[in-house]
Amino acid sequence: MAKNKNDDLARALEAMMSGQAPQADPVDAQPAEKMVKNPSIAKPVQANHPAPASTTRPSVPNKRPVSGKPAGQNPQPTRPTAPKPVTTLAPAKTPAMTKTPERALSSGSRPTQTAVPLFRRLSFRRTIIPPMLTLAFILPLFGLMPLIASDESPWAAISSWVSYCFILLGLVMAALTIMNILLVRQQLRLST
Image (tube, rainbow, N blue to C red; front, side):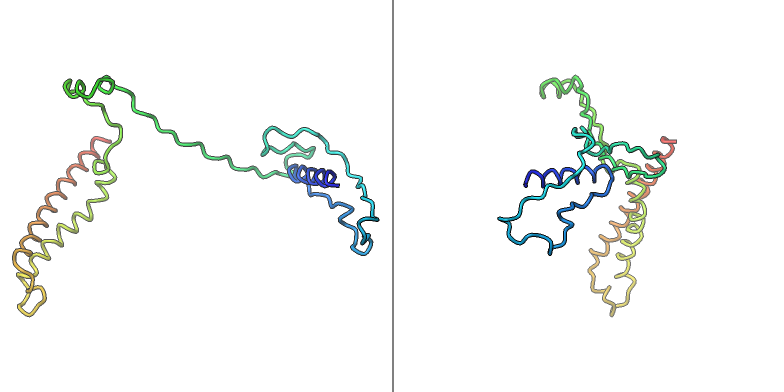
């Protein structure tokens, strides 16, 4: 009985893999009133199932067998393939890498790095220009507020050394912003 059940399940699985709807088992389709209540008296019913078309299983499970239908009538959905794993290449060994650390330092040659630091990338430098300009404008403004504000203003409570630090920090930020703008302009000229 268990062998027949396993065969039925295998046939149903093959039918689903080929795109056909699984056939209902005639034993399972009988109404409950016609079934025998006492299992010791009942004999197992042998179902007449058609033999499978092929007994060999395909070597690749996701490929479906080709049916006799034309391609336009029953298109089979295809499964997307898994993405290929990303591989990173190790940097080539230079003569300085094969030497001992003492010899490598004494010869003056250093191995080249392939990765560019974030702060040297053009995209980062272009992105950081607007925040730098904003700080270059706002910091000196905050530094001047205690000097401009009236005596009753909360800005007057800030000591003068904090005010001067804000002004100085704003000027440094303005200088760094100008340097960054010039470096971006130079990199854009070199890249085109």
